[in-house]
Image 1 (tube, rainbow, N blue to C red):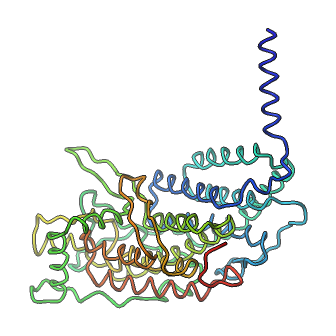
Image 2 (image 1 turned 90 degrees about the vertical axis):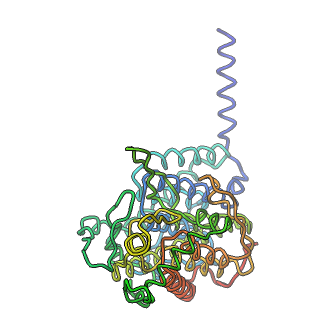
Length: 448
């Protein structure tokens, strides 16, 4: 019995020692690793819950904004987004007592992230492990509790802001009605899913004045005549897919990012869960932040800035998708060129024009270029977790250009959708860089 008592005493001493207050607790969190880990967990949940690309962009943006607002409280060189984003009212938070701001930022991120998804327990478990590690490292109990409380106050303000963006109302809007008009989008094999988020242009943007502020030129006039421009654009896709090089196939698969990929084996149909385009670019943002050696505040800025650009990009893109409601290459080619033809990638369930990857990638690239400059080496390991190899780029714009042309290699977009989408994304990225201010210098930079 005495041995058991001694063991219990030793364990109590270990626990007590582990929870001793650390006078140097400010050094527990210095870089952005905790925030990046939280963002990666959010990606896992987005994939698990199978959120669409537009909805995923919303899930990434709001938690990142909450974390950044704490950074702005901690450091006066950062500029709050309150009063800059559409409808984001300014409030004051009490910060007179000692606050551990990196912990507060993490608490804000976790609370908003949890409010955005279905599988709350997955985020909650991840948060508890992170908080336990921080507390065990010696952050004083009162400071810990006060910091979490502040982070959750900021989170509550961001959550209230998010509830006014028309997302919840849009859940009850009418579904997209497929028509028999020859030029219009039709559900595609193998699942023939209904059109995703046909009313996303009714979501409040962060910075744009309206969803159609950067309206693209319309698609080429529809025609089935072999000598027409539209037919030639379809042939371009047809021949591109039929003559892909191994490198082009790799590019197509690397940038697939289709959370709706469905596999069919015999009579069995099952989904293959994948990262979204926005998730890929948030991953690139995290990689860039880590590569640049940013502290936690710089990481919060990078995630928020990228998230804002992606959110508005999907609103702008989806506005055009359901305005033109154009037929996909797969449908057209099967009907008018080759009924047995298959694209490299599975066609996602929404209209053709413009390309979501083209818009989102170029908007994110411009935002990240503003933060980190050019050239900036990127070791993009985002897709490794999903069975794909690393790809390397010398700049964000180079990565965006590859993501853009990947849609031709994938056989899921005509070239006008790709080119006009890239143009729209760049214009939006320039607009974000002009419109929002996150730091006093706000020039291309790498955090020291």
